[in-house]
Image (cartoon, rainbow, N blue to C red; front, side, top):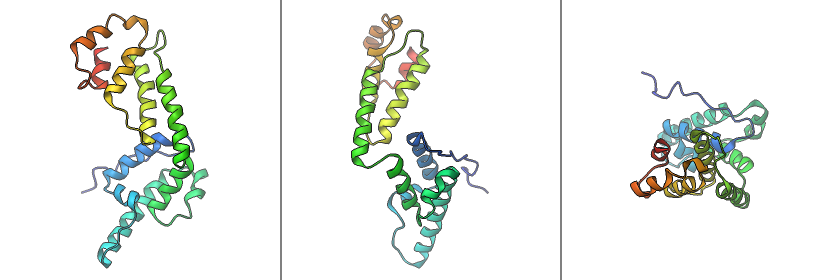
Length: 185
């Protein structure tokens, strides 16, 4: 019997959109029980354990290599482990802690300045909000559901002015999820 995730299509990273590619690849690697190996490297062990770990490492590395466009492949071609491959891409496209800090600052500003445009569909606005949130999370910044809800409720277009107070009164914002809020709106 084949693996349940055997038909998972591998997203191809072409140089931009690293944050989204990173999340998708991490999920694929986790589904194949390979993420821990990518994150921590090949563990030490007896000969059988080491052989099995190296085999899993090669599978993880193959998946990561499949997920990189040909024009970027040369950047990872010299890597000898999945961890080294992953770290090479992460450092180049996400940056070190200083670069992450600068990018997070920009994303925080984008999040704070975000407002729903007149005539914009609620689904489109939620997509813009969640795109910024997922980028922040990819850089290691946790964003709570409550913070997302509060941001959305105070930045909706004026046509929602009559709905917001009723949602705030009828719902506990500490337990409401962004998906439920979107459904309510």
